[in-house]
Image 1: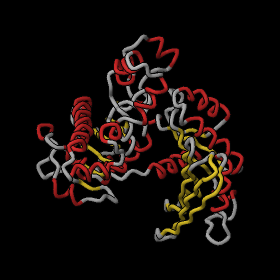
Image 2 (image 1 turned 120 degrees about the horizontal axis):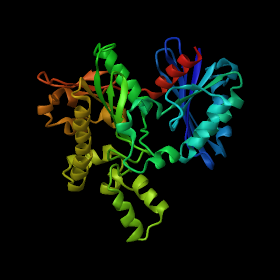
Image 3 (image 1 turned 90 degrees about the horizontal axis):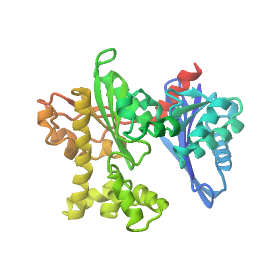
Image 4 (image 1 turned 135 degrees about the vertical axis):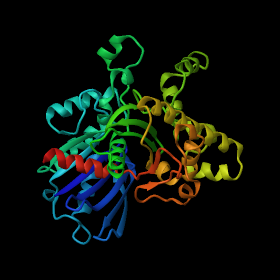
Length: 402
């Protein structure tokens, strides 16, 4: 069975096509600069051994529908195509950022599901409209395929009220849905499940702390495979320091910016979401550039990296308290999987919590599979688990359609 995974953004569209027998990636790609004259499509096909062949196109892509049709042309190309026609794809799995309180699991898309995704526009105004547009376009283009929605927020719907409620008037929760939702749920679900299997904890009491570090960063406390707390809140702005997002901040700062500096609400939103975090402190948002400056003794980069990892460490401590211990701390995503310096600083000096990192193991590692980096005397496993959100979406899609 062939399943296409779609991640539609406001101006981009990522995709992967899986042959689910053997979970082989047949092709993957990204459509960028949608809505502009100089759109770009980068497309890769893979043979049975995983060797890639790359195609890059530059052309006007006025909307998502045009972009998707160009992808179909690549998928069905007579020389390098991986399918004969769109009927070869049995299902399309869509990443949907926000499911509100409507969805705690993956759903076969119906008119009612589409309507509820639209109701969540106010909760994710940058993401859900694009996600829904991708669904509508794919429904037309892949007419015989079943359409399935996989929600970023669904994994976090197991949180108890004491974790997800804010201490604000109850009617704002009941009437307006203001609460903690969390993000990156597909990644947290995938790596926590992989960890539980790896440690042989299936069916047992398990306590896992997942640390998803990319340009966006979040953490989750996972007990027996279910999320009990997460660092992102009502929006992806909350929690850890990120590439361009501030993370945790006193709400009074927002009032100060608006009242004293006369900034408009949209300016504050732009500042905290796109001009803060590592970018705001250092002028760089790419961790590789910041690490290079750190190693060269740049004081600003040194401060920023310690700010970044100190916040991770604080959440580790908080989640060990919430879980009453931990079987494993798991680093994942672009920075978590590849940056040994961040992992070391984030998990350093936690010996009294039973966490000890082996510096040599950690330093050598470039993770392509699950790896252990804890020291011999560590009571808690410290793992690097590569995330695979696309595969998780494909697996959940297959489960839903039977």
